[in-house]
Length: 311
Image (cartoon, rainbow, N blue to C red; front, top):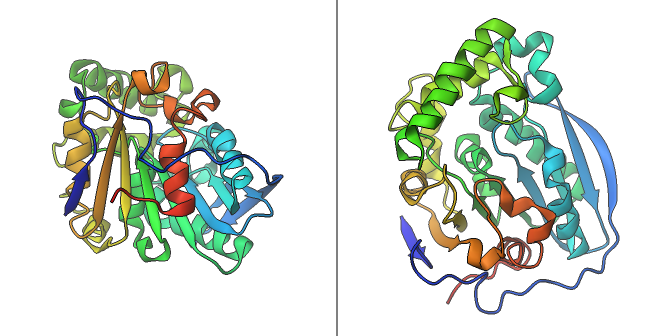
């Protein structure tokens, strides 16, 4: 793996790379609500953002237990700055779909193996010919590796993406307890994990149990015999930018490194940002808040829209 480490926690940080600046918003944005059918017949809610720019179309893939609406401001900003289209979508078994009739058959790996490819196909159809880029938040970076679709993208940005083993988090006891002593029992009691448990929006029970089981394993799912698609990580050979945060209690340097090492044939560039860059706490979820448009978003948007990399 070719890793260009730009900053590590404890070192002076900067918001974005030399020459990367926020674009001046110009293009108007149109939003459309879609339903995307996966190969196994699951309908995924999605939002398509389009504009008048001729830049790359961008696929935005969510973190676990996070609905697509969380990324609306970021998607809008990409189109304002020249992306010809941006697609956000919900994985199966998330939010209201946690109680769907078929939810008992859903598995977490399907987010990458089935849902990600379906969303990519929908974006291609809507955006027409031209370059594609992608950005994945937390599990959204993992989904790229599972999908087998990396060659469709010119480049991909991973934001707070990590190997989820609880022992590499900054709060291992709390993470283990919340997932296994609260979340897992809730799935048997309710059939899903309610949002009230505090692990994000509601999730279908089988999906959450997969997540909890993987987070108990130091290798996450990479030796799970039910996830042979993990071998696809080695097939990813596009430029990747990994953006991590020094105050992320889940995405610690060790957790991020454990995932990035699986992209063994990709040119991976790491960027670490902290509260001093943002003017506020970032954590695992803060990057996509609207308040981060000026201080942090250029670290992703310049890469996605222009492919700028450090010399």
